[in-house]
Length: 202
Image 1: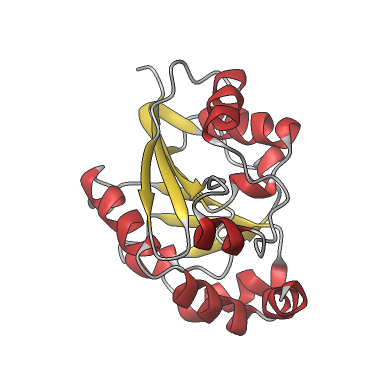
Image 2 (image 1 turned 45 degrees about the horizontal axis):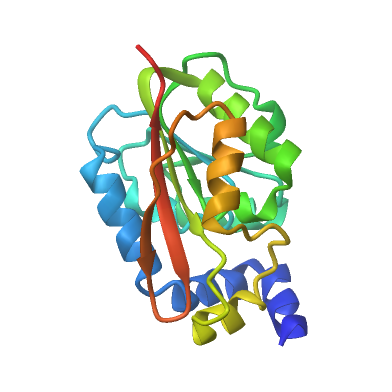
């Protein structure tokens, strides 16, 4: 099955629909979380790190959204679908934006692709470009317990090589400077997920 996942990932159109189908329930919870945190309010400047094919960009219509990713074909696909938003090809470890640029920085489905060093750099840059009082919003997958058979089996198909347990996640967040991280866990049919909110001191 991994060969099929790899093929889907190489084609932005196929990968977009694979993510939409596999993410049934996942993206609804992401949207509800963003709504509760005021991400769609007018004049909010929002950065999504690892935006992929721009699934989240569909929800932003005010022109304050910017998506970054390292996969240029995915960005082209995202831009073709979301004309009012901006997409830039760059690595999250060295963002080109000035300090204190954004009200919200999003990281959805990204961290399980990053090793520990990349994980720390990801948050170092996220907080650098965030305005004081702004928020980092994370929504990602967590490694299920083996007894959670269906989700555990599905997690084996995940392309990300760094799917972490809750204990490992808490340690990685603390090492990234997030004190006492609070994770909210949830489940869809095939995915076990978590969310985290971290505010930059005013």
